[in-house]
Length: 284
Image 1 (tube, rainbow, N blue to C red):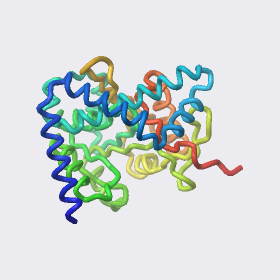
Image 2: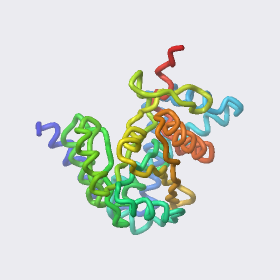
Image 3: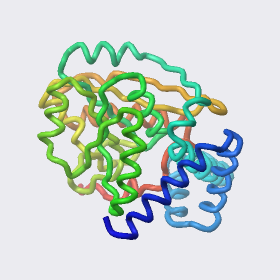
Image 4: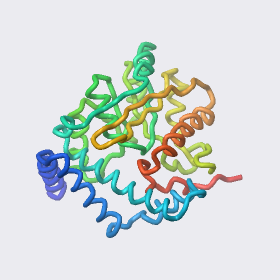
């Protein structure tokens, strides 16, 4: 690693130790402070996020749109602090779970399982819960350009028994994991440009990655939509929902996208609105 990358790694490790020694109230205050900075000073993508919220909920008032944006800053800032506080923070967090039997039954087919979710709720806590519960999960993530930061993020996830793959890794690795009855975690809600398929998302044709559907069609591995939402202070709910089997990429992709939308409508402040979700337009 370059000197700056080593410094980045050490700085993140130091912050992790410091956050880990704080009380839960202290971590909450740090997250709220970070949110206030992000909302008022670091405004990159702020207008994009507000525009997305208005697009998704045109029937709501401007005041409601602004409040959701503020709460989104707060939610994800606190999720970052929690991620930085592994593993100490797990002494304080309580999880409830629904439909875990769906996952257990899916693994009995010995074809692997395709977890599909979005940038919704705490996907990092979701992965941590799955790994700590003893399930064999590998998540596909974006590799960080800064190797020091990339190493830190890998170590944080690996501390919860979560394996890593990166978006540009060979598909053969992913198929091998499914062959060995592992869980393959995919976050499938970003704009996929012209490489994606267009499905309805908040009443708008939205370019969506087709990888999850392809893996399902090619392997027969069951698909499950999963999420982890914050329900109260220090309390989170993990849920699983089976996605119907199919052979049509668009229909499968629409199925899990619709489930994602239903969840977002319940907890709009827990969706990462900062992506350019509707950047690519459908050609008629």
